[in-house]
Image (cartoon, rainbow over all chains, first blue to last red; front, side, top):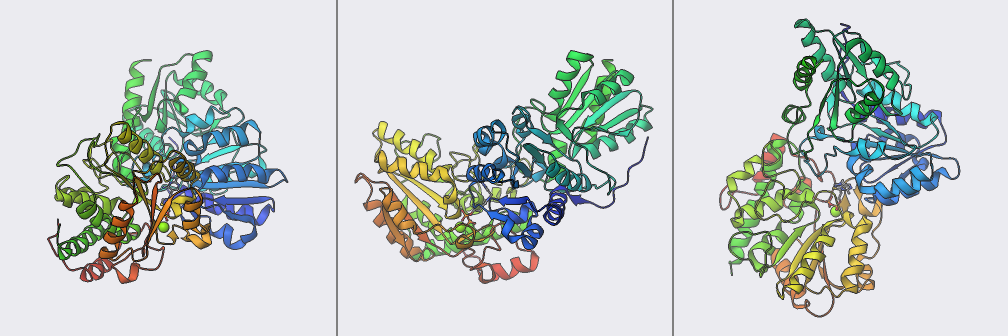
Length: 317
Length: 281
Ligand SMILES: Cc1ncc(C[n+]2csc(CCOP(=O)(O)OP(=O)(O)O)c2C)c(N)n1
Ligand SMILES: [Mg+2]
């Protein structure tokens, strides 16, 4: 299989910060908003270089979403920044009415998604956000896998007209996608071709999928690994093409298996080419405090969980 | 009534607990916890009328809700030292499989906690429901809450503040940790709160100022004053003027220690300013 090299661990939120800073320089219409979490969202550089285009909202996320919607009326491209929980569940109706239904060009940028935010615990670890966001008509939902890809995605969504949910995380993880790779919204990336099973992963689980595929290779199992950074619009064709070859699929995400990537995959395949599928995701549970690694293991989100799911789905072919 | 010296000793011990807890896991929120130590010690050991043991309904006893859930270290230490759970359990703060989650939860069944908090701005609404349940139950005990000042930027608070006065929820004492700090800096710079006293009064609350929120005698006196004002048709607000990071010189007068743990050296320094009193866990 194709080998990927970790260029040095980094956090995806820093990729967001770097992308936003670059947008600050290249696009005068980009404005940024934050609800008392500037450091956590790595927005300092943008603020330093463009103080007049930054809006500190205070701890008032609902107000932030409304202000962001309003800023688009006048041609601004607002990027809101707070934790994923407070970017979605906290403000769902504000997003629904003032942003999605009103079709406003707001970029909802959400850090600390999933269990890997770690010690803060379940109150902050949202595992339902992809589901909530993908159900909103017109919303684009993106969950990049590493620093480079998050930076590229941040830059790409400024060019896209319409509301976007960009989901990223807190921990330092492997940075392995090419530094200059252009980000194409809605286009799945083939990471490694294989013939026995398809693994389609998003976010932090893409790297785990690559590790799992390497281990499977040693057992004589050829896994095809697809990085699906965009959950909506969904690149069904890429998945269909792959499962036509492999005949089974494992979906992997740091999210409840209900409502996330896995169900999007299953929904698509059930109407095109019904295919045995196993879901790697949290099993309808809240998270808890712990280190990211401990939580990934306990909640079945690491490479071993993916490997197990592959062995299981192969038997169902 | 516990002697003043005992409460003061407990305060120092709780500070040590907070510092050691956050240091061990290199995460958590010492600043607000230290600033609210005198208040929490006084509340649980001098002011609240509590039954033995813990049950969720808390009928015929005073209730407390921590709305600014990030200051869980002070909450856990005070609860443990009051006997709600073994003090050794403070060792498990923020670890996997612990009842002492980063932010307080009911999910793991920790005695003393009646609602999850951590996502800011929700505690007062819950307290209003509990206070009204007390009235329905002809239970004359009180409901206490604690909120961050930055937390008041959340609009839900103001829905609750309006409701409380409009519905004469006068068995409620809501205290604001008025430290003037939040994550990104001083509240004055992030989003000014304006005149909080006048705001609460304009919404129909009775407001008590405790100017020396880190002087336990002043806290007790002020809270007793607040208690005397309950049952008179208005909810009661206490503006507790505190210093974030109180009791550790290098953590005071800054937002820097809102959510940052001390390293080994800093811990040693901080603990030396707060010598062991009734015994470390
Ligand atoms: C709804 C929500 N938004 C944002 C946060 C992140 N957050 C945690 S504490 C905090 C600052 C709180 O300020 P304050 O209430 O003054 O508490 P202090 O810093 O004084 O302890 C923020 C923004 C949160 N926990 N919940
Ligand atoms: Mg404060």
